[in-house]
Amino acid sequence: MNIGVIGTGRIGSRMAANLLKAGHKVFVHDVRREATDALVKAGAAWADTPARVAAASDMTIASLPGPVEVEQVALGRDGVLAGARKGHIYIDTTSSYPSLIQRIAAEADKKGVQVIDAPLTGGTSGAEAGTLIFIAGGSKEALDRAQPILSVLGRKVFHMGPSGSGNAAKLVNNMLGQIEVYAFAEALALSAKFGLDLKQVVELLSTGQTGSGILTQFYMSKGLRGDFEPGFTVDLAFKDQTLIAQLGRELGVPLYFNALVLQRLADTRAHGLGSKDHTAAIIPLEELLKVKIRVE
View 1: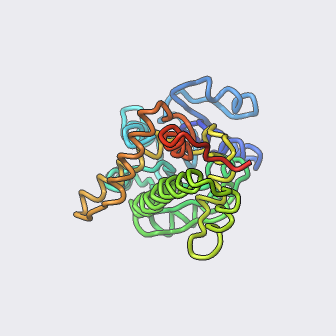
View 2: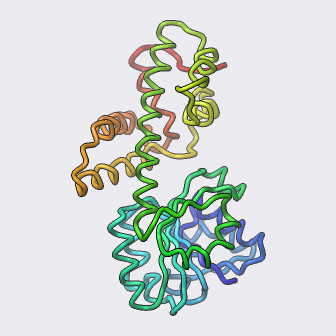
View 3: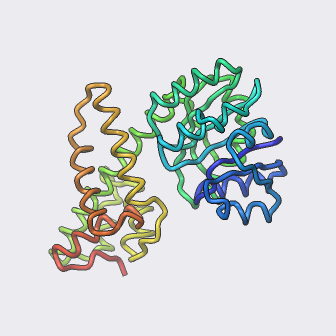
């Protein structure tokens, strides 16, 4: 099958590589052409606009920074819908506004193009291993058609409902995830300041009702080891929490913890940590308390 991939950053490049390995013809585009060089060398074909990616492909997958890029790539003059033919499937894996993907889906429907919003979880390691989890919105028919390709890229697809449902569910997931990131940061800071053995604290907190992958997977593999090279950046976490706040306002839902986490993320970014892994949430606390929050 001919597959287009638009956005070849940390996630998109790995998805494209797995599609190439599976024997598909892959057309790639990124605003930074050099971001596609390794893929082109591996056998992908460069296309200079999203429209040309879509025109050459049966299915297009986008992995983009946020809503501004999503709107431009899908609906712009040289966007996907300008080049997609009837029967094309457009899959957007970006965390974005549910209302935006609904608008894109409505425009696509006029051309006979099916749209799936399928934001993902699993990070760069999951993208590389082909074990991503997709949180999808769209018709069952479109998902059934896309399943053979999604199964190359991931291990599970949750169909959450019609267009926009995937984005809404992903935002709920990310809201809770960042609440946990900052809650654990404070719990670990308190433990370190008292002088507790953080390895034992992690073992304790991982047992029973307080257990969480945020602690056992993210903190234990990144921040608590002093490794802040990004899997999921502070800047991306801030973007997601801003989207969540907007969704809460649209629906009239008070999101008190989201508001607090947004302030904490703003503080972390103000410390110059926006490009670091989100477990860098512990660094401002280390500076404030003059203590190291680490597991040896």
